[in-house]
Amino acid sequence: MMKMKMKMKKKTKTEMEIEMKIIISEKIKPSTPTPPHLKTHKLSLLDQFFSVCEYRTPSVLFYGGGGGSVSRLRDSLSKTLSLFYPLAGRLTADASAINCTDEGAPFFIARANCSLAAFLGSPNRVELVPHFIPNHAVEPNEMVTGLVPLILQVSVFDCGGVAIGCQVLHKVLDGTSRTHFFKTWAAVAAGRGSDVVPPDFTAAISLFPPVDHGPEQPPVQVLRPIEGGGCMAKAFGFSPAAITALQAKGRSETVPQPTRVESVSGFIWKHLMAAAVIPGPSVAIHAVDMRPQVRPPLPPTAYGKFTTHAIARYTNPVQALPDLSHLVAILHQAISEAKDRKAVSKFQGPGGQEAVHQHKQKLQKVKKEANASAYTFTSWNGLQVDFGFGMPLWIGFTGGPTTSWFRNLIPLIQTPGHGIEAWLILDEQEMANLESNPQFLAFAAPCSGSSIFAAQSSL
Image (cartoon, rainbow, N blue to C red; front, side, top):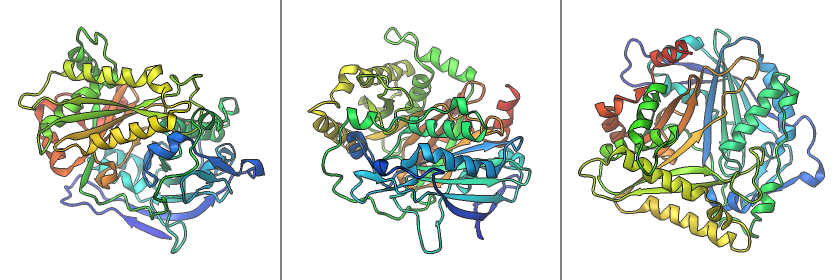
């Protein structure tokens, strides 16, 4: 039995520590063996070139305890992996394919020594989120490596509440495919068979045929701990009223009706410029789903990575912060250009490989530009899924001291009640500067125990 204890610094009387015990560690295999003709799942051109092999996306869904059962989660996961069989396989050393050998997804069941209410009510709950993210040895002396597409942890609170945490290898699926996996797993667990739509594994490979060779460097690396790396992760909530106000401030002749995501992203970007340790050019990168723009258009059930990137630049000297409407207009134009069918079509066909290579080089150049700060925004939708416990009370990403892999990454998570929670992973000094900015805090509420209960009471 494995014990974990999160150590916090300079704790106040109201902050808490959590001790976790791993009570079950196993590998869940598909309930139905994968047929021989499906044993190799080739990655598409986009999978091969757009992702770092060892980069994993964490997420945690917190539920009250009514209705569902942990054993049902385990059994339904096995059935779901029969549909999403690559997630039970292993990435090849050259990162060109997944061997669908049904080795199984590492699966942990843990017990927390507190109630869900106590955790959600704690002012330092964001810092405690890594406890619920699977980051453990699968077996003694065997570490999870970059070859494993999916790792899961179900944590049970004293009160019966449940947290479902996962890490997915970003190279093999994007946020839309992750959401489809969660929706399918939840539907199977709750007995909603009519809601189950199998994934389409053929679309990516047919529209974006892979090249014959994989990346130069193999991805076989031990998965490092979440903690450490000189970055700090914190969450800030934007209420519906705050978002509406930001949309009003973001309006212009160019963009008379900015979206919620454009307005919140522009606002955060503006204040990150003010918080930057070294002033200079600033870049906002927004992940864009290409499924609706490819030819033919694809549904969300098309499995894989269909992500491109909108790149917005602000190059004027940051002596006075730009108006929000100006930044929203820059963002809107960049996102519109990334969504343009002609821009997307260049990744398809004979010139696709060169177009993908050039796009990747462009991203790398932007992120390495001298004195420039680059921030990557991504919008998370659709994770409000019911496994039989009701809808999640809260959705987490990571928290506290965090690996530098996530530096300047900003997931925007849709919350109950039509709000947005922004998770910011920044340099520690930059985070401190942002947190002390009253203009930022006028619209962005630091995530705390009281904030979640206020949001729930407004539903």
